Amino acid sequence: MTISDLISLILDNLSRRKGRVALTAVGVIIGTTAVVILVSLGAGLQRDARDRFNNIGDLTLIQVWPGFSEPGPGGGEPSQSPLTNQTVADIAAIPGVASVIPQDGLRSWAVLNVGQLEGSGNMLGVPSDALHHLGLTAQGGTLDLKRGSIVVGYTVPNNFYSPRPRPGQEQPPPPELVDKQITMSLVKYSEDGVEIRKKVRVYVAGMIAETRGEADYSIYMPIEDMDGYNAWITGKRINHDTEGYFSLAVKASELENVVDIADQIVDMGYTAYTQQSTVENVTGFFTILQVVFGGVGAISLLVAAIGIANTMAMAILERTREIGLMKAVGATNRHVLSVFLGEAAGIGFIGGLGGVTIGWGLGQVLNVLIMAYLAGQSVQNGSPPPTVAVYTPLWLPIFAVIFSTIIGFLSGLYPALSAATLAPVTALKYE
Image 1 (cartoon, rainbow, N blue to C red):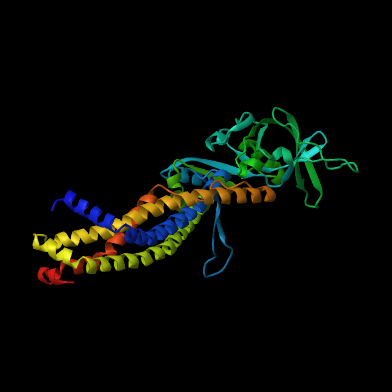
Image 2: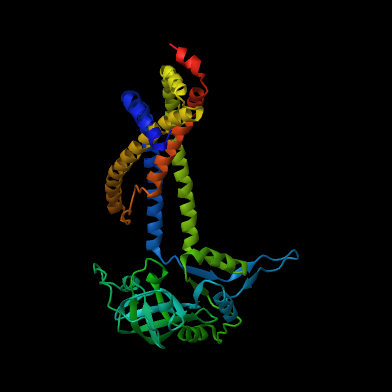
């Protein structure tokens, strides 16, 4: 018996019992539909969470802070591992690191003055070309830092306010900062607690385009300027070889290397954080959720498998004389086994194909309904709308059809073995 003869015989046998095959396949359709919808729902949640993280900030960026070690058995103070220039060189030597940007903060605080308005932000001193290495883009002006200049984040203008408003006066709109000379007031305190201020003129060279990350509320200046301001505040010259930097921004060349680089930095004794670690943890959670959802749907397929086994067992009883006739004309046990296994797998395949089609269609309908509802909730809460609710990855329909076919094959295994081992003489005498 050739493959084409076997397939033709299987299709002919299935077509002769359309009603029974259809009813048996309904169970497989329901199970496959449940698997497709539930796993697609989990995949949609995972995709939406990943898209939200991608919109929050740069996933290839690793923030590094000084490390702390616990005191030994003898007690004492915990020791700190400063981020020195040697640290910058050591981290830059790690494979996969594109750049290391030292960042230093103001040892006190400062206020920006534009006319009658005051504002502030997270002030950071960085190398002159650091903003380009961080992958930032300019909303206006330039990101090149020169002595006496600053670059402000996207939301910094919104922080300006009138410190002495008149009764009933509304707060003025955010000021235009780019390409303006403004005043920065540095603040420190004497040993007697007296506030001392120093005013310096700075030039706003540019504004950073929105990143939805730290850069939005930061004010960047050349690290040489920051060192000078800190020297005035502390009364001593800043030595980065001993005191180190406030933090380091480490840029990875590839997203796949981020977590590994962060782990190596931690092993060096420093504190490292990257959003990619959080993304992987969230992705892992949703992967487990998909497995659980798929398992719930697979229970329906197991119930359908019992239906297939019952259908095939009944078919053997009805076709016992047919089996005897097949063996009488030369069919071997393997031929009989192949026919019945093929029919069982065919029922699984038909049910899987129907379940995938219905599951995908229902998934699209659910996606529209859920997205419409969540979009309304986002408007009320002021949060960004979701990107997707139900997402069917390409591998899922293929897997579902193959899995349902295998379920059908395994369900028909015992009835097919029973049919294959029937004695021809006994089968021909069966009434």
